[in-house]
Length: 80
Image (cartoon, rainbow, N blue to C red; front, side):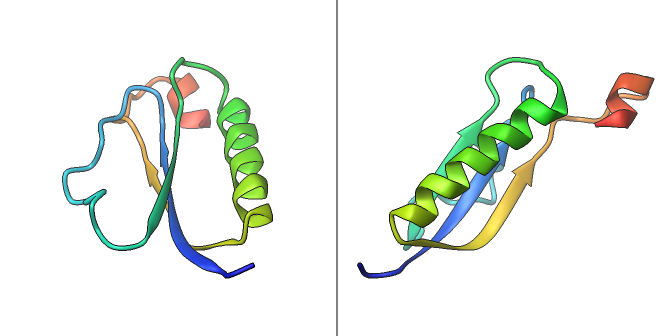
């Protein structure tokens, strides 16, 4: 199995696709997008699952990019 260099983009609920990240750039890209507001642990579980599946298919993650939503100042947001 040939190794594939790849980037994983993790988009937190409420965040937008970063304009500086060009999805047509050469190389493979996978995305995990949190479609609901939940505990940070649920996003961690989704990311871990995706990484496991990608690595099983021979993908080598050269970068993982976290796109977070604009910060809030309440305690719930600080904990994440």
